[in-house]
Image (cartoon, rainbow, N blue to C red; front, side, top):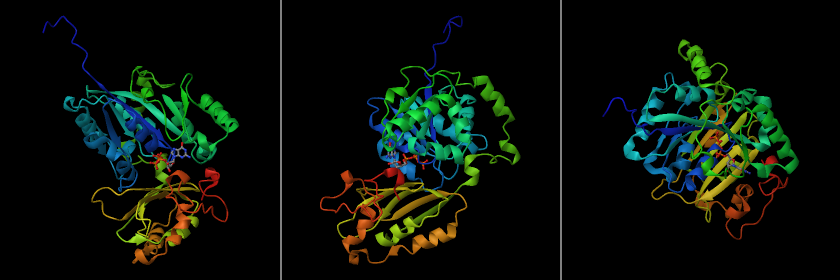
Length: 382
Ligand SMILES: Nc1nc2c(ncn2[C@@H]2O[C@H](COP(=O)(O)OP(=O)(O)OP(=O)(O)O)[C@@H](O)[C@H]2O)c(=O)[nH]1
């Protein structure tokens, strides 16, 4: 090659960080993007908090080999990011012909740390592609009150997805949008969404992302990275997840629907998030029941088991000041040795928290005594 001619630009793969507080809807957004990616090849890195990788399982069916999972910790606290670098290098290898890589950050991650790792990354095959911050419209005030760091995260976002707009009325949505506009850098788009349904083109880079991010420049980020004290033992201070812990429960026995609902009704306020799936094995209800709770909100979604998938329950419980052994003990007490003898009506407590559209025919509406199931006001469910 003539050395006077500039080298052709190498093909670089943008890496987009999908961030947002616990339960805001990151996995939902990611699944929507994957389902509507058309011909775009998407590589996915899932960083779950807790080593049972529920989020990874929720998206795995959609991406096949193009997904890696970094369970058991928080990506922003990887000491040198080398594990992430290795995964990104693998995904960005030309053989995969990946167009974009999406990192779903743990709900407890400091997005700024990940952005720093990406902009400082020396791999010529990748480039930082933007920070998408997912916000739960219904929990906006509560999240900000409990976690003032939220404002800082919004200040560095490139795109904000105001998710769960179905859970707020028009006036409340307008109020939250106004607050977001004040918190985000000027001109940052705030896109409203129900169930994460955003236009994939917002992420799949038909418009190049700006390298200058909000109020922080590329240089600012690198300078701050130099001051970052991960190596000196104070690495977790001030991070959202320092105050949180995850408790994991796995059982190969069925769970009693009544005892589980009783457990969920009594869940402590500090148990902020539950996710996973449950096997009840009750006659007529052999499905795999995905469960999500965010604060007092609770939902079950029945679905088929994978081919050959063992019948079992796997739950991750995330919260602060949790009595982990006590919670595990209570869940173990929910185990049911003979689910086939359990009357189908025992499922009604669970079915109150299943969306009407997902219910099997013939199941009574069964709005509970307090009428707070997901058919009513989902914001007060639980
Ligand atoms: N009503 C309503 N529920 C939603 C919407 N988007 C997501 N959800 C529900 O909110 C719960 C949490 O969604 P996820 O996508 O798992 O949230 P996440 O941010 O990935 O959660 P973590 O991984 O724990 O941080 C699930 O029960 C979703 O079905 C929405 O727009 N409206």
